[in-house]
Length: 126
Image (cartoon, rainbow, N blue to C red):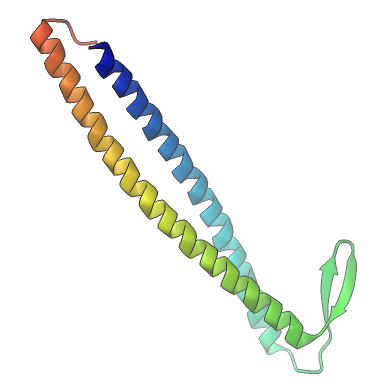
């Protein structure tokens, strides 16, 4: 019976850990979504500019002049990177969801085994 209780505690701990990990990933994904949205808007605005327009990039407290094509390229690279990160987070979330589902099934099995063991021993349920 003690082995079942220990097993149950381990499964619950793993389940909670997976839940926390998923929560962190969802939070990071929201942040990436916001960054993607912001960078997409910046790229759209840069595309509206004429080729001769001046573009400035803020580096710390200083505005530094930057070539328009270079700015577009940098933003496109950022969008590509953020998109890849979003895909990676989605894949991780899917794997964690599968792990969580398996842990949930395993928890149910251990709880059932504990109930059967308690019933066989005639102990009251805890």
